[in-house]
Amino acid sequence: MKKILIIGDGEVSKHFINRIIDTHTSENIYYVVETKAKKYKNVNPSRFKFYEFDPTSLYKLANLLKMEFVQVIIVMDSKMDVQYTIKNIRSIKKQLRIIVLNKWKLENEDSNVVLIDSNEILSSRLIDYLPNVPVIAQNVGIGEGEIMEVLVPFGSSFIYKHIGVIEQKEWRIVAIYRNRKLIMPNRRRMIQPNDLLLLVGDPTVLKSVYRAIKRELGQFPEPFGSNLYLYLDMDILDLKTVEDFIKRAIFIHDKLGHTLIIRVVNPSDFDVVWMIKKYRAENIVIDINYDATDLKQSLFNDIKTYHIGLVIVSNEIFDDYEMRTTLFEAQVPVFKIADRELSSVKDASIILGDNRDLEKISSTIFDVAEQMSLHIELYNYMNEHQEAKEQVIEHYYNLASIFSKSIKVIKESENPIKKLKQKDDFIQIIPFTKKLTKRKIYSILSTDSERLYHKLDANHQIFIPVQI
Image (cartoon, rainbow, N blue to C red; front, top):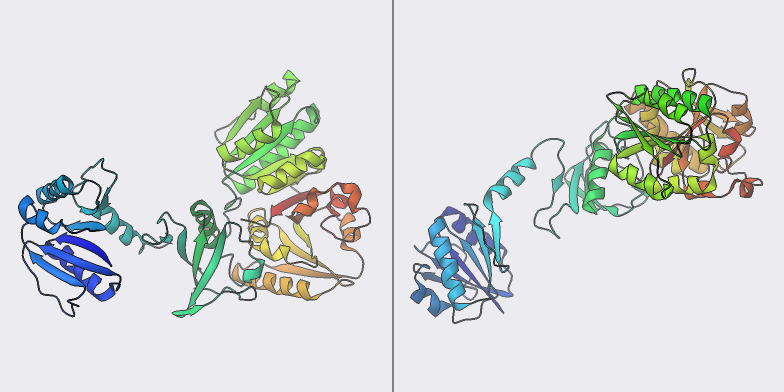
């Protein structure tokens, strides 16, 4: 049986003791000291012992502290009374754990004295009632935001998604509340408007998930990051190519907004460097790497430092096996620019596969299409298995209705890659999965349209990670 000492006075103390009476465990016995005794209902006398005396009196408190308590909780209205009570306890029990309701910004270097800031608790509770602010469990787990509840708004990108296709890395949907009823999640369960999701996971990851659930169109590259990043390797690109490349990146920047960071590596031609510098502007940052450092680590550092949400590269850079693998590990979308104008592009073209990856990135596809004023085309190769494709198509039609965005489903009896090779004015959008990091030679005999992305690399392509 664990003995707990409660020292209190005032209304907060009274409410606290009432709560304990209603919720106490049979494993604890409570000794309550009050300067003026109060009456409580439904008290179990075998679990509660009440005393009336001034705890600032060392003599009176010393008699009670002859017993072994596991902890003391102090809830008092007077700052001086709290300080003297702590002093009295410490003169007798040097290591006893003391929990104090702190109304006065008290400070204490004793590691066994826990100060609970009352103002912080009240403001935190009030924040829970603000719209568009995540509700975080304060007294469950470690209380740092690893448990969160999120209301799914009608325009959310998560609506009508099956839980099984939502990539949940370092986080989980552990419960759904719908019409004030608890629904246990499973892979086939579909999220609906006004569902309240209970999430558990890494606090940093949950913040990104919260933004992903709440965001509407016009936010890309969020939730992956907030800025755009153009990667220029001057060992690969010549002067004319670099200038055209920058102009196309600035076109993307104009469409998507945010800050554009132009990272230059291997700056061997100073004429090119001076040409690049002339593009410096208020929201265009030029960062030149003169050191032959580890380019992979440098890229990762830049993504973290600049909060990058979209990396823009050339065909040549993405074609490099090591670089493609590095970009995949970075887990941010990649815009691969081809040697043709972006201003003439009209369509976002997607080839349906026999997996559900396109459902995972659907909200990002709609966001990109909206911001770049593109029509969405889904190419369905009818000679392949259709069950998974039909579910994806249904999901896209649902999102199209939510976002008032038209889509076009094109049924093809021949491989859509051949059809798209005859088309110029499109951007192909592809899920960026690990299979795309394999060397191209291994895809020669493949029938997987995603692994055959390089068949269309004369066109602009966007690779979107399936994880948030």
